[in-house]
Amino acid sequence: MSAVDLLAAFERLERPRVLVVGDLILDRYTWGDAERVSQEAPVILLRADRREARLGGAGNVCAMLRGLEAEVICVSVVGADSEATVVRNLLADCDVDLRGVLTDPARPTTVKERFIGRAQGLHPHQILRVDSEVRDAVSHELEQRLVDFIDDCLDEVDIVLVSDYDKGVCTPHLVRQTIDRARLAEVPVLVDPIRSQDYSKYRGATTMTPNRTEAGLASGVKIVTPEDAFLAGHKLCRQLKLDLCIVTLDRDGMAIVYPDGRGEQFSTQPKNVYDITGAGDMVLAMIGVALAGGLSPEDAVRLGNVAGGLEVEKVGVAVIERGEIRARLLEQRRSGESKFVSLDTLRALVAAHRSAGESIVFTNGCFDLLHVGHLACLQEAAKQGDVLIVALNSDASIRRLKGPTRPVIQEHDRAAILSALDCVDYVVTFDADTPAELLRQLQPDVLVKGGTYQANEVVGHDIVAAYGGRVHLAGVVDGISTSAIVAKTRRGAA
Image (cartoon, rainbow, N blue to C red; front, side):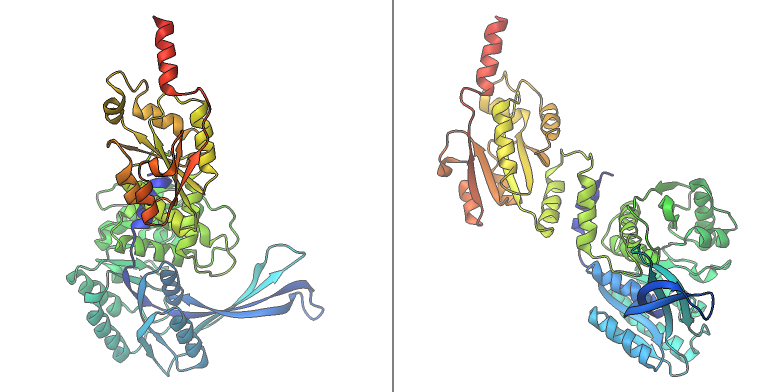
């Protein structure tokens, strides 16, 4: 799939309802300058200048889902302490539904505290992490309350994400009941598993996203190559009755494996890797939203790679929003992708550009025997906005307009020539005599037409004016036209 098609699929995603079951963690960060080695001990002396609290574990998954504009219900347990108040407030700030977050006065809220140092103006790095936690399983009474709540929610969600950090919430009974009841309700379950040799509690899930080490430990296969990941994923699919397994392979991207042995690797292209913290949660959230939105597992993994790549470019856990993923996909689209697209794809792309704050310019024509007049018009059109769409008359349309001897060049070749121009962003063909229907569907901000027209003579000017767009008349190059060139060529041949 091209970046254009992936962007179109991404734009079709709506706002799914997601139930997140897992361990809530409070991440605290202390930032500062790592100035020197302490005189008291051989340790770095950190001069702190900033402190912040962020959601970690299942809370981070919830925050990332909200960044992707999903509706989120959180199911978990926290302590009766000040850290729990911070976690609840952070979740509430993200507009996460907290009805399923229970309090256990007998256990502390899990906290991970990180100290981040800057040295000699370089990029900051983590110096130390301190964890405060209890890993004992939650009580049977709390466990049953969580199961009952999950059962009540299944008819109002599109997918269940299990974010298991092995802190006591995702007990075998809770996970087993969640999967079984979701299966009955025909709600898919996506699991981010713990590091363990025994994955039996995840049996029957729709899919899971173990990393290289986790998949290797659970399957008994040492994963070095993508082929190893296919073998490990296949074993997990068979042992756990999964619909598919997604193995995350850090720098090597991800691999999808099916129970019948089919497997495919999907590469990732992060620009700069600064910090892998939170990358797994981001991948889980993006794949979850994509699957809940009806995308194929392959498209979900492609988007997961993009989201994970953006996450590792940031320091610490950071929420990646839809706009950032859209911008990265648009950036990839401009890197050598085909510009010749279908109308369905183009509608989604126009929506993406508009969401990114870019204006749309539209021009149309036959562009048979591309000449200097065409080039001048297209270059002028491109200056009227951010994205230039060229609507190209089909061969059948040109024959109706100009007679049986035209076009000289077929539409796919004409589209290829236009696509090669830097000033052109997209090319789409139309079979009607006018581009009126395209204008109604795409609603460009600017309609450009070359030639000796008045604005009110341009086909579609009334459509554009009705929604607040404008018409721009491009200059002409005197004495240059395709018909004149064709006629001259035929006279010469005769």
